[in-house]
Length: 422
Ligand code: GLY
Image 1 (cartoon, rainbow, N blue to C red):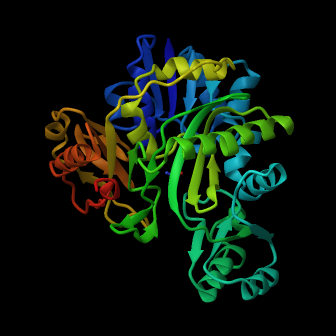
Image 2: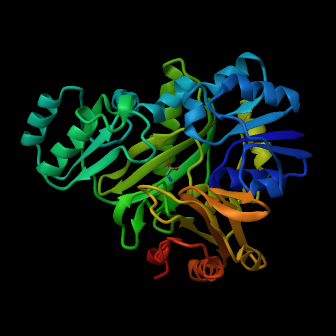
Image 3: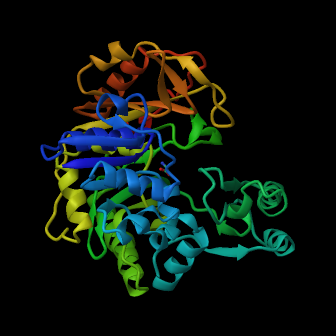
């Protein structure tokens, strides 16, 4: 089969790598891809927001399946465009993608169908939002309604910070249209967990849980990023909690959307918090997580292509995913200045050495080849994942590999998965 992967991040490299392991895959193409993806696939530089251009390319290469990685093309209707022309594609339609593209849409759905989530109010008017903050007790969470590249959520520890976050959205318009409406939500305490599942519109097939590290610095300090590391599975998600998440959150969300006349086919990502009252939804995403995917897929023993095809064909009945019993730890290496800015064109050294290590996986993100040399091309540059018999071993291997890699200004966290190493 001929497979096309859309995207260029570490998540898409992990997806392309796992798909390339399927005996059914003959040819792999990526748009636009990165230097790592170019080692296993034919990459083509096209605009991932140009639905017609991507459709034309998929038809030209006679793709049997196109897999869409990032949220932007999903919200932009890429899957709708392919489906109208009966070109097989993995991912949800733009109506479903509103679950990620509009936090207000997601919240209203959860409230209507009793899916556990934090209490919140919606505002467009600054005056009303400020009055509400005056009446509530901090901390509170201010969320821009739309997509904001991971920057639209502020946990405000006091009223002043809450007012600033409101102004950022409603007055300074820092997130453009995405911040024209906001949610002010109660602050929930607990460990955060990501649980992703395949959905064929009716059933869900959950993956193993992962945890993502969102802040730039060790000890969860500094600004939010796209994600600085992850690990899988999550030991404190007991079988009982896992079942609760599937039965009270993931499956009811798919069923609720079905009742609204919306069929969810693809991956649903529950961004969850484990509170004293049980798991609650912080946010939904309509795609694989980045960098969770880089820690989940090295443990997946099942054929990813087969699961994706069964998802598209609405045939997930009886599917059970097979997992390696090993633990996986993934550490993100980022450029100087990230997340506020990033540097490009900086030479990367040591990858060949790191690559030789057993059970180590190097997933490229912002990398490219310049005159044959590997250089950085943006904020998150690489994810270094390692499998081990337990978290101690996986973590040790991941950091041994990280220590072989250098580029000027390289930033990474030293505490990924430390909390599960006892
Ligand atoms: N890891 C966060 C995300 O994928 O949105």
